[in-house]
Image (cartoon, rainbow, N blue to C red; front, side, top):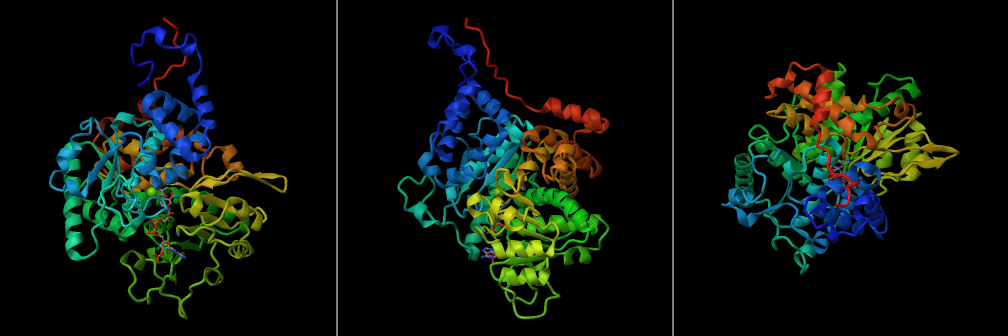
Length: 550
Ligand SMILES: NC(=O)C1=CN([C@@H]2O[C@H](COP(=O)(O)OP(=O)(O)OC[C@H]3O[C@@H](n4cnc5c(N)ncnc54)[C@H](OP(=O)(O)O)[C@@H]3O)[C@@H](O)[C@H]2O)C=CC1
Ligand SMILES: CC(=O)C(=O)O
Ligand SMILES: [Mg+2]
């Protein structure tokens, strides 16, 4: 509880306490911690003691604090959550609650005022795999970004972990593990039926208990992600898609990632095209990793190409996908459903299984990594990209850093500084041959806060494809002159609040065009008035650091 929000007798506080800058004290305490996990624990404690001070410190120090609350450190927090747990921070709905999920949700204090829930089942946390009940911090971290990055009110957010078990043996055997001690229901018909019943009951109960809520599904394993979104996309106010291109990637994590990568890719392609003197649309994009994230991003890029006037076939032909078995081709036996859409029909020859060979065959202008394979983009691969392209686009997007396909410094060195780079987790700028190089962070954190804010304010019934596309275009267009001349592909994180407000304008306009908005009051506002309205609605911490001693 904040010392400022309770009536403490003055003598209970040190005499000069109220006249010192607590933000500086918090930063000093934070910086005194030995490692990322300790910093995470410290910040979590600060949020509990004094939420206003916590968000004030976050807003003033985004570059330092976001990598702790979010990727990469949140990955450590999740992996170790049962050991570092201090206090209840979210809602757990377990498989054992089946039949009474409504009552469980009703225990959350702010039913009617809740606006955004991030829901994970812990089955694919970042690229770290099945972390079971330990997955909750990813939902908390995302919501901190909704709050910090867009100004969503903290009391309207709901982090939820669906604990249906874990297949990670070491957790089940860990005496401190906090989740239910059982394996996840399997994939035989009867187990799927039980899970479908559980998920249907959960979503029905969510709609009843939190009538104004938008649900973001986060870090479900690819098979579950596709399955549940297929079940729910037209029924509930979860992130949703009226897709022109029917391939199953409406899973929100992938949708947002698609939008954010589209945005960075647009800026990267402009840089690369102008260096090579080729048209923007003349791109060949190789996706290394074809799970929900890879296919989600591929879909978003290709749908943008169709907006540029390309036919669907032409747009699709620009995209190549690779999984653990190599280049995905249509003649492969037993190909999973989500991989079929982009499977190549034009490759004749023995299966291409090695990335070097695939790159020699495709000669991509852009190489995107969503594979969770650390250092998969070797020196040979990166040098090949540089040999084929004046400005090779290389986006190693797997999170956290420990799973990133190539480190920034290596990418810069191996391409003699020609790489156009964005990674999923943050890297620091580096100096190479007397020049400072600044990496981009291609992470959905740039987009979901603004989409959430816009959707809440216009009371969107669903989030349509065009809302997501317009959000991506607004993000791409949000670079300042300084950022563009530094060849950044994403704006600097310190501006995320303003960027989220601009994205929210684009999202609201698009919701209005698609007639899914229910807040008629916003329809007649000019863009300028709408931006002012959005900024006025952004929640800010009300903490003051200079309160006189009584
Ligand atoms: N930057 C961002 O904003 C975001 C990043 N991500 C990141 O994307 C990554 C992937 O997520 P997701 O799609 O859900 O995960 P999945 O596990 O579903 O997909 C991983 C993909 O990589 C492929 N793969 C695995 N090993 C290899 C290998 N040795 N060679 C080639 N391909 C391989 C898999 O192949 P196969 O299908 O054959 O198993 C699969 O297609 C995660 O690290 C996640 O953190 C996710 C969302 C947003
Ligand atoms: C960033 C993110 O959502 C992921 O890696 O899953
Ligand atoms: Mg995610």
